[in-house]
Image (cartoon, rainbow, N blue to C red; front, side):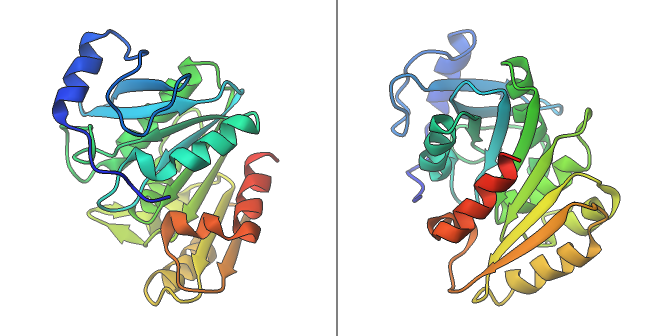
Length: 232
């Protein structure tokens, strides 16, 4: 799940000009049949993503720091093949997404959730890696109507103004935390968030090794744990 170099802003302009961005583009990560989309966040940010699959359970995928939507494309394809509708996005000021308050990654997640609902999803799940993990936890506490579940892969308690501690204390959305035992900073954060979470349906998986964020999904037991949660 290695991220590929960021897309140029020219791609975004071309997508916007195509009224809905549902055509093949110069995105190096996209394959035929996958839909490039452009969304507007609540504060006006332009959010680029790729939608895969046609299921009624939508899954928003948010990448880690200095990455883009390509990070989650392989997992999005697995989800699509398993009957989900996945949407992997570029967070603002990453890849082809631009504009808005640089700290409000939660609004990008909310925009993607809205897009999935508009495209036919009746259930919404959020999955984020590292900074994306913090973003999905915060978004899960804000989105109305509520999402159905949220997964944080190595999400820190705080990231650039996003407060995951406050979010999990106010959210009742079912939540799963995953972290590797070798993550000196992020492992304690996951434990703290797990204990602070107000949701009745909550669990944590601590994986051996030192991987971080989306790389945790390369561990078969961790991927199975996430897939079982999304399919519940």
